[in-house]
Image 1 (tube, rainbow, N blue to C red):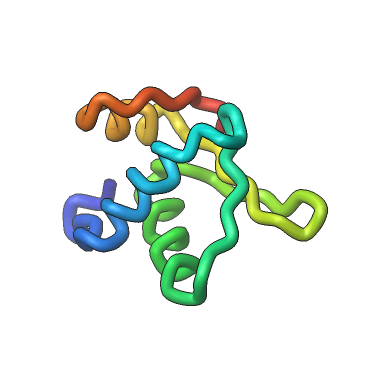
Image 2: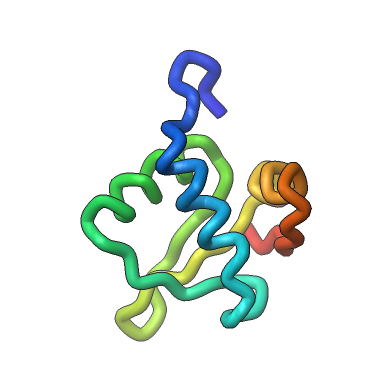
Length: 81
């Protein structure tokens, strides 16, 4: 994460919400609100995850850094980015 710009608490909680969603295997599919899309930008800039569009939906890929952060709350995700 960028040391000069720590993640906002809401962005951090959104990260864990995505990480806990195990309905989609290693790459969760999300339907983000406008506010959540802003948080996704922050999460991507912090190198915690990447996103891609698939059949009109947004899918999430966790980075190694995202895996490490998830583990701090005993959440297991797979690095796919």
